[in-house]
Image (cartoon, rainbow, N blue to C red; front, side, top):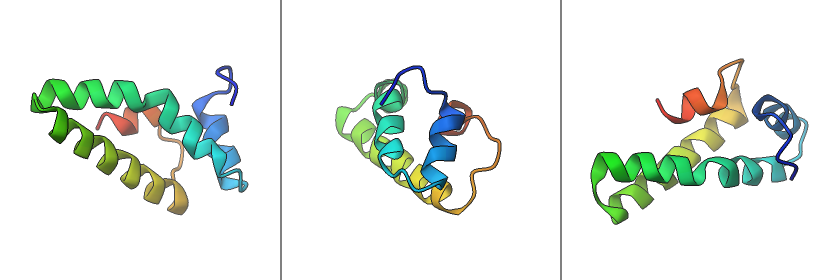
Length: 77
């Protein structure tokens, strides 16, 4: 997917049925989420678990109603 596509557009396209947009969101943010989790947990194993849980929760949130929340803001909550 194109790096120039905004997060909001990815979310809108996901709602329209383009499921590959979720993978693009994961690729865009996985390093940031992992590094933040690693800094907080100081454990690679725990950071990987946090990474999984964050994106699993995001998938559920996107599948229901994401609203106008900025994607990165939601991820780091």
